[in-house]
Amino acid sequence: MRNSSETSKKVADPDMANNKSLDEINGSIEVPEGAGFWKTLMTFTGPGVLIAVGYMDPGNWITSIAGGAQFKYTLLSVVLISSLIAMLLQSMSAKLGIVTGKDLAQLTRERTSRTGGFILWIIAELAIMATDIAEIIGSGIAIKLLFNIPLIIGILITAADVLILLLLMKLGFRKIEAIVATLVAVILLVFLYEVFLAKPSVSGIIGGYVPSSSIITNKSMLYLSLGIVGATVMPHDLYLGSSISQTRKINRKDKKDVARAIKFSTIDSNMQLFLAFIVNSLLLILGAALFYGTNSDLGRFVDLFNALSNKQVVGAIASPILSMLFAIALLSSGQSSTITGTLSGQIIMEGFIRLKMPLWAQRLLTRLLSVTPVLIFAIYYHDNEAKIENLLTFSQVFLSVALPFAIIPLVIFTSDKNLMGEFKNKNWVKYSAWFATFVLIILNIYLIIQTTLGL
Image 1 (cartoon, rainbow, N blue to C red):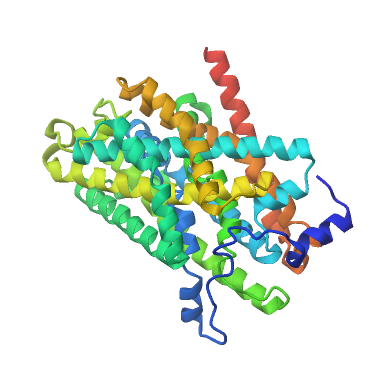
Image 2: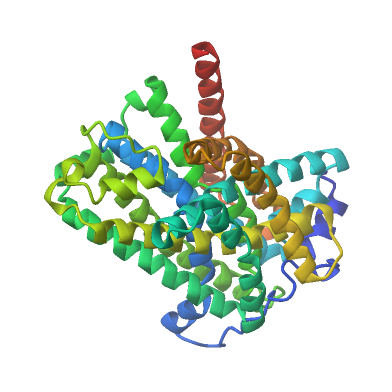
């Protein structure tokens, strides 16, 4: 990456930028002057919700519930650690956008060579595709379970939700935040209710948050753990967070205004990611409480749907209502995640290759680029839904492999004094982020080696 002071000064000055990230909503929300803590927090609350849905998308469901069903509460510690890493990285991502006036994709492209930028763009696009696999398939299956519509039709309906996003953008970004927040509330309430009925072990849950060495030594547990990390710490959310943190109008020449924006954006992000942590914990707890030791095949959404209404599997609490609530939550998760996934695709496309075209066409193109491989696979295996759903766990592990390629530029940029000035990372933040990145890379190398030896 280029390190010249001239380049750094150019990048650090937002007024010299030719393009704003998500230009039509950039700085579109006024922040009241001299308002109290709670009113200011309410103004900044919203972007964190869009970030959080990426951490509770359908890709989490199979990996988290399967983790509970296979290893009881042991992997709760992975959910906790992943959530803490997510909070750290997303606060850095928001700060990057607020201070520089540019998103992570724009800065990565500006401060790398043409070849390096192209490679990172390809990896980012593949991460978006991996995310869409979970979101589109999850939503398509939910539509089938709820309305008995063929899976391919459900996937096509889900893929067309980019048109809904175009309409919502016309209504204002606050409307999008409110709609996504409502969908998140549905997901949270459904799983709170189902876990309450399942009556999990409180002592088992508490013990599960303590890390175990077996997570590293057991290959199956490690594979699922990386799936949980990939589903929890999402690469595309780092790009998204650095962009939508700029939707609030601030004066970047006023350091106090910048500091205030960073403070309240971080609070918003951490609050919403805490809710995502609760949802992911509930998913794993549900898997442990209902399915551990039952020898049930829970590798597919339809298996979970059927199991919740089967008394031989989950006992007296089995009910068609539980199954329908599960499908409703799945649809809510898929739809909210596809909204944020589409925005992330646009940010990555604009930032890396500086695409010049009408916004509606740009969104349509970015959506088609990420959705087409999913549709091709789904059409090819239309008569084998198990193979389609098997993509989910693999997609989450791929996201874990792709994550360092987003984290490394993020840590470098937010630790650069020339770029960030007095808002550069404190040493503990920088070293914690580097440690998390290093551990993730080592775990991925270990998993690849173990998988190769197994084959």
